[in-house]
Length: 160
Ligand code: MG
Image (tube, rainbow, N blue to C red; front, side):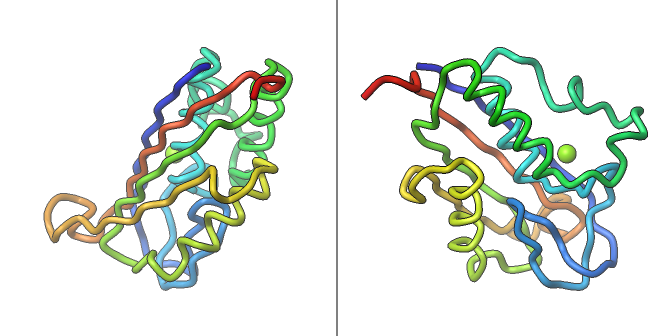
């Protein structure tokens, strides 16, 4: 089995919604980012790449490459999942934390979990999403940024 860890943070600006885990959370904010800025997907992708010993998201999708500008992060996730399946692995489980003072993510956790399970083609019980505020301190607590962390366990595709 293989284990991987990923983390990401993106700054916030005024806007028309935040992509978090492949779900657009309606609010008057957007991410300041080269891609769509989906911090949770970026953390998950880095966790997967880590488990596969395949580098990191910045290496595979550099922000200096204009081809990546504005690309949906679900594209990056699908390519990473294809890499995982080709390497002979399947998801054991995925655990994530999203740190956001604003917006409140609790009402969206179930949707994010179900959407991720669809991308991974697994039962939602293998995926867990936790949301925490920044307790009013630091860039997250001041509502300047949203951060995410993810840890993933991969199992041999053919194993029990
Ligand atoms: Mg990122």
